[in-house]
Image 1 (spheres, rainbow, N blue to C red):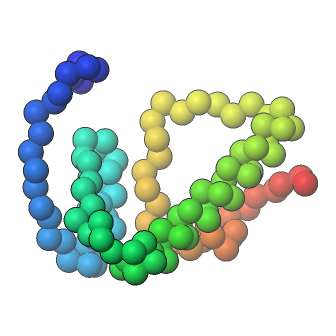
Image 2 (tube, helix red, strand yellow):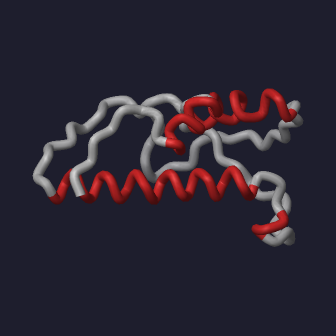
Length: 108
């Protein structure tokens, strides 16, 4: 790991990825924690972007998880810290999470 206040050596690269491999490829790159993405379409409206529906789905899932976390903390349930972040779920698991097909009991 590099020094906190020093610039690390970087390289600018442009990737061309097949749509079928995009999710897995970006997931793997993101999990390394060593990649920054640059928006090459700054002039495009957010609602005209190609993957806007997927981003909205992720935002909605994040909102639901924040709500659940707040309710759990409000009930005084200890949430242990994790040493390692979990890997990104595959698209099928995301659908299962969205529809709530995993067993989960929430007291409201």
